Image (cartoon, rainbow, N blue to C red; front, top):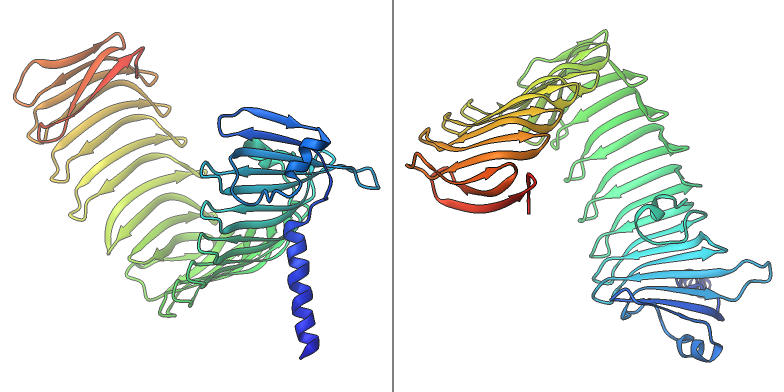
Length: 411
């Protein structure tokens, strides 16, 4: 019993040292207040005023850089902390001789720890592109706003290595994955929110390679698939409302989530052709894939089987005329598109078929526009040469909003 007590005390103490570990003698201090004003302090007398300040507690700053006296080996330690507008600490980054090195912590705005990790390289700044350069090493943990552990993984000099675990906010294990040099490797397990196994997938160097099994929350097996280097070779589906299967890398793949399921055409082990999505047994969306990109029409339907939206694609980009319908089937709008941009005419109609607006675009810029109140044959406002006001109404004719345009863009 005494041995166990001393072990627990030692563990708690060493954990505290890691979370608050910092050199004692300040060399300089850089403060950025909430207005963006910067102040650098290097005087020993003035630095004494900050020697006992706990910078993990709320502060009236945006960011604080603490630089400490050099170590015996000549390395210069520093700590950068940032704060929420409320004053609550947001991030704490350890720096050594101008590079990210040491513990990294991040907090939710309510003060609960969000991320606990360790860095061995990268830019010595917080935010934006700097964080993309960080090299994580060792255990890393992520928590939600209530302090519940959501993720636990290990890095080897910036690459995921070994077991990674992910939980729901209720503490239910959702994913168990294994990595080798940053790639998924071995068997990954996925779980339903009730804790039952959902999928087992075997990976090799980041690609599916080997068996896959899929189960419903009630433990019913519905899919058995086999992959080779990311390509689906064969599949058997049972207890499904649609006949599907894959043999010799050709066929129809089936997958589901809750009351939704989908089918995908498989050619040479890859999704190639039509993809259909169903909700409660009714088709709600379909599109086509070619070389991994959308090609051809993408359509959306109501539960009654009426088309409400049609989008044309060419090599993954919207190209052609987008057509929308009201849920009752009446035409709502036609819009010409080119390379994901509005190019050409746009017309919309009220529910009873009266013209609501007519616009003309050039590379996403509005050139001309005429806007009609329901029951009136004359426009109530217009845009000419990219300037003017667009008066928008809802489908019943009620005023929605007015938008002013300049040089073809709202302002």
